[in-house]
Image (cartoon, rainbow, N blue to C red; front, side, top):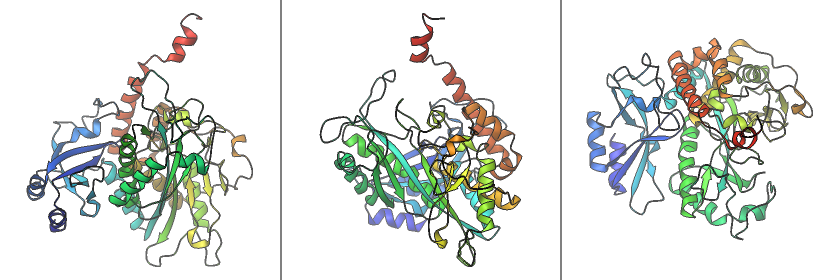
Length: 448
C-alpha cells in the first residue's frame, strides 16, 4: 500500500473518505484522518459491520437472511483499491476519496458485495479468454429544491429564472440555461479523474444526459458510482437538486442508464461481434439472445426500486420488451451503426437509479449465458417495437420472482447474493405498500 501512502503524503491529504457501495448504490463507509487511515491499512483496522448490505434505501435493515449475513453482525474490513484514490473536489481542504473492496476477517472476499459481484462476472469472461468493454450513458434531472416529500417535484430554473414548459431534447439554449452547474460538474469530474465525454439536454424538462468513454467494466462502474455524488454536490452548490430517480415527474420521461457493451478476444484484441469480413457475427446474435431471454429475470439489477417501473411505459423513451433492432431506439436492445471494431449492443432497459456495479454485472451475465447456450434472438425488429407485447416485469415483486426462478442467472450471480438482494428489495416493497398515495386520497376517499 506504499502507493497509497505516498500519494496521500505528496498531496498533503488531511482525511480520507473510504467508500463502499451498498446494494442500492449508496456510498457507505468511514471518513478517517489520514494518519488513522494509514494505520488501518496495516492492521485491517478499517472495519464496518456486514449489515450495511442489509440496509434498504430507507436506511432500515431487512430481516430474514440470517443464513446469509447478520448471523452475529460481524465485522468486515475495507481494503482500499489504490487505483481509485482521487481528490474530493468540492471541499476547500485537501480530502481524498477511495473505493474499497470488503473482506471477512479471515481474508475471504464478501461475495455478495456489489463490486465483488461485478468482479466475479468479469472473471467468468476471463476464464473463456474474453474481456468485456462497456460505455454507460446516464440521464438525470435538475430539480427545484423540495423539502416536502408530499409535494410534486418541479424542474429547476436556469439562468433565465424560468422553468422549462416543454421538451427540449438536444436543445443547445436549453442546456446553456444550466451552464454554471454543468461547468462545475466538468470541473469536479476533472478534479476527481472521472472521464466523461459529452453532455446533452435530454427530452425531459431540465433533464441531462452524460456519456462516458468506453473501457473496463469495473473502472466505468467506479466512475458512475462517483459521478452520482459529484453531480449532486455540484447541484447543491447552486441551490438545486440533481436526481437519478428513474421517474421523478408524472408527465415527463424517465431517466435511464443505457449500457453499451462489446466483447474482446483477450489474446487477439479483436471484437468477437465482428467476423473477419467485417460483418455481424453469430456470437453477437447469441449475446443478444442471452440479453433477450434473461433481462426480464435480471430486472432487479436494472430496475431496483418501486419507482423504477414507472419509467417503463409505452412511448416514454424507455423500452417495454426485449426485442432487438439495428439502430432502433424503440427496442430494448439496440445495435448502433458503427465500424466493425466498434460493433456493440446497447441495453436500454436499465434505469439511472440502478447500482452501476449490479447493472453492468447483470447485463454481462445475461450476455454470457447467451454465448454459452448459443441462444438465437430471432429476427431484428424493423419499425416501432412498441407495437409488440409488453414483456418486461411491471412491478418489483414480479421481477424478484422471475430472478428467483432463473437457475442460469443464479448460477452466475450466486445464490447468496440473489437471496440477499431479494430479501432487501422485498422489505423495501413491504415498506412502500404501507404508504397511502395522494392518488388514492383523491380518487377513493369519497367515491368508493
